[in-house]
Length: 283
Image (tube, rainbow, N blue to C red; front, top):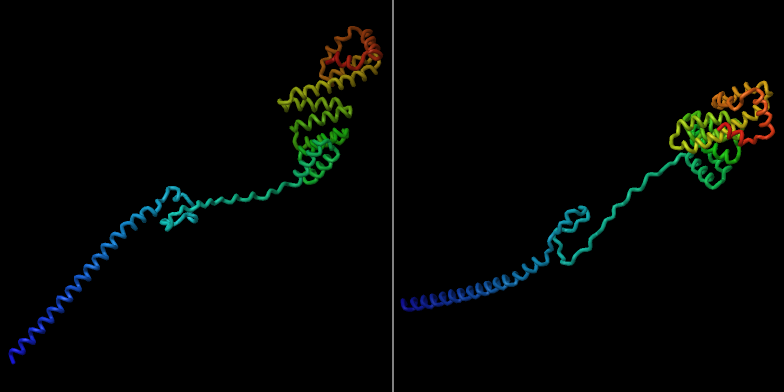
């Protein structure tokens, strides 16, 4: 009986050892297989890592300067370069310009004047003045258009109105002098030109030329009046001329030596001396 028990124990121990070594062998094979798989995954991971290093683009400095809303992702998944998106800022629309109606009419008047359409220019200036009746520039411009139309009385009135607003408006003084000369008001025209000459230092030559012409007209007018006086009133006429023309009396009287010579000069001038010769003697 003991021998049978010993034999059964031996067989069980042998079976146990066989199973143990079988499990050990299977475990070793399993571990070897896993180690091979692990080494294979390491070898395949190295090229992937290198590939990833090549594919990952570096961030260029200009990306920080882009608008935040338009900036690309920090790590793009594609190696393909993306087209730069150019954002053109919208220009702000200019605010609407409301030009006063009087200025619009003034500009229309200037346009007609340049084209020689003086009557149309007068109408435009008149409409401008209906919105702003105290604009000295428009008043003076309308006066110039009246001068072109030979409407000298209206031109004088417009210049006077402009000077009531701006007494130093030189163009109005010069234009009123032109109107007054045309109306035969040479003494008043002479005064306007003298004032203009004092105010405007840039146009002295032009104003001086008009002043000389006005002086000539004034002398001609006064000399014609002088020739109408009788011989016994020649001295009075000379005094009158000297006061109005600012030519010293002695300069006029020096032309005559005796009363008889004065009479002869007056008589001779009445029949023979032309206007330009008389003017030349006093200018």
